[in-house]
Structures are given as C-alpha cells and as structure tokens.
Image (cartoon, rainbow, N blue to C red; front, side):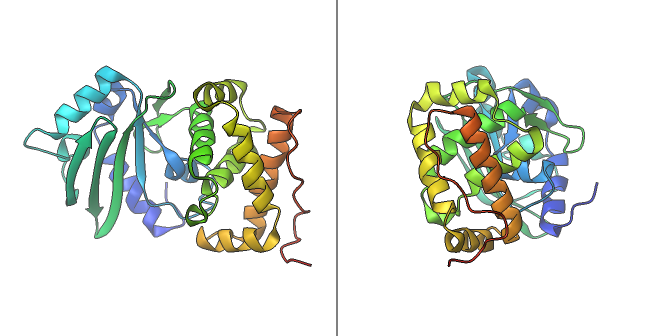
Length: 248
C-alpha cells in the first residue's frame, strides 16, 4: 500500500524491516500517533516510531537484544542506519535511525501504568496496539501533555480520529486510564476542549499538525461528543459548529 505523504512511505518501509516475530513474542506493540495516523487516513504528519511494551519478560528480552553486537539491527535488521546510539533504561529504549536519508525517532516505551494488547497488522507488518489500548494510551497522553501548546493538541485530535473510526470511547479504555490517573483524565479533556472551542487556537494547532482546519475541527467535535457520551455527568465545553474557523 502506498501512502500520500512520502515520509510515511519511508516509515512503513522501516516497519517492514523490523523483526515482527521478536516484537510479538515480547508483547511490544506499535502505538502512538504515527500508528493511529497510518491506520486512519494520514490526517496529519507524524514521523516518530513509538512502540509500547507492558510485559516485564518481553521488555527484558528486547533490552538485552539491543545491547548485543548487532545493536539496533537486532530489531530492525539490515538497511537501517543508526544516527544516534541506543539509550536504554528502566523507562524505555531510544534511538534515532535513518532510512533513505530520513531520520526517524524510534522508541520502545516500558509501559508500567496499564496493561496492553494487540496483534500483527498485515498492512504494517508489525504488532499493532489494539484500538482499545490506543484509546487508553491517548487518554493518558492527553492528561500528561494536553495543555502544552508545543504538541498542538495532537493527542486530543488522535482521540477524535479514533472516535470517528469507532463511534465511541471504549469503556475498557476509559476504566483503564482512570484506574491509572483518576479524575485528571476528564479534567484534562475539559481543559483541552475548552481551548479547542476557540477557533483561532484550533486554526493555529491545525497548521502545526499540517491538517486542514475543517478536518481538525471535525476530530475535535467528535471527541467532544464522545466525551459527553462517556462521562454524562461532566460538564464539557460545547465546540462551535464546523465551518466557524474565525473568531467573531
């Protein structure tokens, strides 16, 4: 399958170079924004390759693998250039690699907050985080950094795109995120949606993410409606009608 953005084609090629059997055995799943973007129509540019591993035995195997002489090639195989050496600790494995001259920030996050599941995705060629786990991770990410304008509300928009694809925030994802973080999950959603109700703020963020403003607003509105359905007792802000992209 060919992708519209050339950078995404390089990332998918890099994914197909990875040792899917090792990753699957380690219960290590492709997740984060790039995974959601690639599976939901390339609605924004996303260039990082993030995997998540919640399995202690699996993470130990991966960490030991990258410290052998092959280094990052224990995971990627041949064809990948190491731009920045591997760093690994209790929190994750990090490196910058390159393919066809395109740098790729690669990370395996040691997930200790929630359990994860997933399976091999035939299109991407690697284990992919399940949709429920993607929702849970994005709810946590929005709570961690949602109000940081530097990330342009990407976690909220990714959630909105997941909602657009599935229709609802899965109950299991909601419970998993709230078990880890408590009430900050809904408070963070409220605060982010409040900002996204400002058309000028939304337009700036859409530009940073290289998204059409209308598409950005549709995703934000989808998240708002799903949040109301999932937490009916919480007072979420009402977003403006789609098409109203300028301040009065």
